[in-house]
Image (cartoon, rainbow, N blue to C red; front, side, top):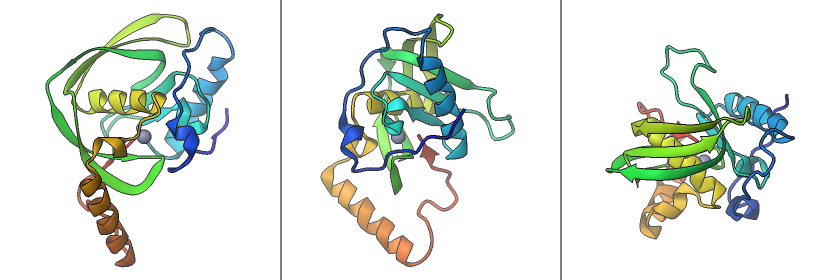
Length: 182
Ligand SMILES: [Zn+2]
């Protein structure tokens, strides 16, 4: 296993749409293992193959409670697709590919995702709240989208300005809340 470098905004590769994986039981296994290791090392709660420069539809997530050990909720998903979405929720999101920026993003509160595991099993995941948000964020990456795209331009500029100011003052924004790094 190996930790791979995570691409950073505005790398144009982050804007590319990933291709579906044809051979699920094949070479993708190594990629999935590396992605999980990279996610834990970051640390983050999710990672899409796009973020390590691989144009294949693969994501890993581990949305766990603070008292749970890493790995307990690890999901390795190939060719994930959102089959249903319901409701609305707003989370403060951050992204491993967009350093020093977090912002509230509106997404579906509940999603049903269909995907394959590296063991070639077809799975359905019913997710709510945090896991639903993380799944939507990662699947966006596979489509070449960043959470920045879901903010208004004004909001984006305001957040950037605020972030720069806080950095000059030597502290990070959102003190007290733990932003979701996905
Ligand atoms: Zn991200």
